[in-house]
Image (cartoon, rainbow, N blue to C red; front, side, top):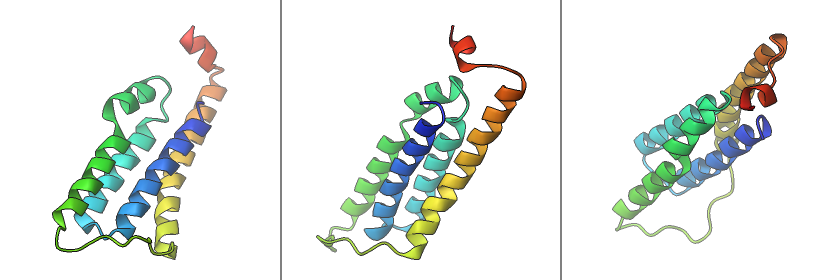
Length: 124
């Protein structure tokens, strides 16, 4: 789904990021995960090219691997069975990731609309 799909994919990636923060992953790993998610979300909004990039980039697989590697390095500390409740920081992180993606989707959609370019015409 051209518009909704990119937002949902970024939201799903934000869940991985929030889980990493709750598990106490180091900030440098969180920054790298955020960068991966933001690049994937922003480039994924470009029709066709963005989808091909997202398919090749595999942002969620990379972020999950970073999360697992960071948690595994902390062998001396066991992970809590129950994750702490969401904080305002968690919600702000998700919002900060979603706003640029939604704005870029809107901009690309308006640009295509003004030029009367339809996705069906591009595909076929």
